[in-house]
Image (cartoon, rainbow, N blue to C red):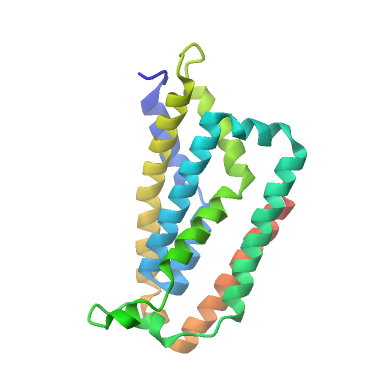
Length: 217
């Protein structure tokens, strides 16, 4: 079907891979714990959008350039690592906002519910995923195993596999965001605890950036 071999096997593999903890999972959990359910959801949407970008890159063959060029890989890796460290630094130095806790209550005013810039959180999720070269190389190494090399429209095969991977990831990551935000709900209602969670989250982001920086292609 559409040049895809063993599609059910791919779905099972995608589910198992999404269940494996990684940078994306840690990003979503950290956002959800420190900033709440909605922040977690927008992080999930950002990460999923990043996966779709990688899918398009893989389909167009741009990931192959990244795999074959050590310079390109290093540049993308450094950009991604610096960006994660930047996010971490912002969270560590940010001042606690009491209105963040207010978003957890359904009866709060619209002004309070806008205390977080969800568009910014979404964008940060996209960039965090897109600037992780390991994701691009993973797509390039994993997807071809399920594509019929004789199929004339290989780009379509990559797109379908990418969409499938994104959907399975969206479902799992949404569950992560729900569980993490619910677990930390009572903690975030305390401004002091909220400030501590933000700082811990910032440290986690910086750690993810350093981890990405030290990884080899």
